[in-house]
Length: 236
Image 1 (tube, rainbow, N blue to C red):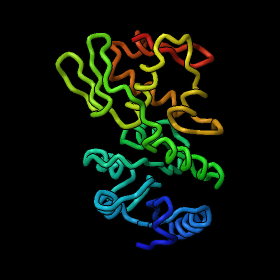
Image 2 (image 1 turned 135 degrees about the vertical axis):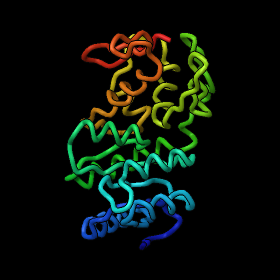
Image 3 (image 1 turned 180 degrees about the horizontal axis):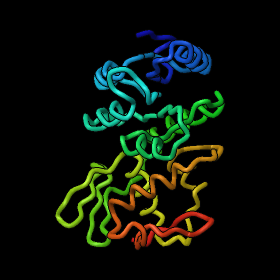
Image 4 (image 1 turned 180 degrees about the vertical axis):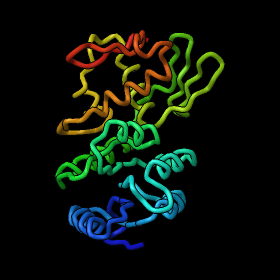
């Protein structure tokens, strides 16, 4: 395990088992103002990220011992809420869905441009800052209750866990209920923290998973309504 830079700077935990790529990414991020610590093994990464303080985790999917999906899920089960940006080598929707479902906040597909990676890192760090937290604590709708502080959804006597990103997304939708449309661009800026909106399906993927938890029939939603060609509106 190696480290670089000053601890006064944002601390990034880079989990990548390709030595050349890990060195290149670490050098690039160090030069961009980050303190970088690297790891090449999934099980070791899980232990380290659980015990030590980082501001952001860059997590490769294909790793020895445990893959990136297992690492992300393990961290979330242990209550680690550090933003996770997953690095995936395959541009497959199923891989992205699995990554987000396991607890990652966003993903980039290899090969990627340095500018895109840095922009997504900065967005996650901005979004995770305390000043971006909303005041609303809970909301009741459709016989359900969502507790945003605990990231819990109670429905029909059953309590479901919400991922960090699902909770943030639902919270934003609730706060803007009644609006005729909330565009994908708005959600990427306000929920994900992007300044420049990237081309990504991450909003649609998160909406789909959120519908699985709150809708009786996710294919015919009554709360998160699609406004075709524009975005969504919340009717709860």
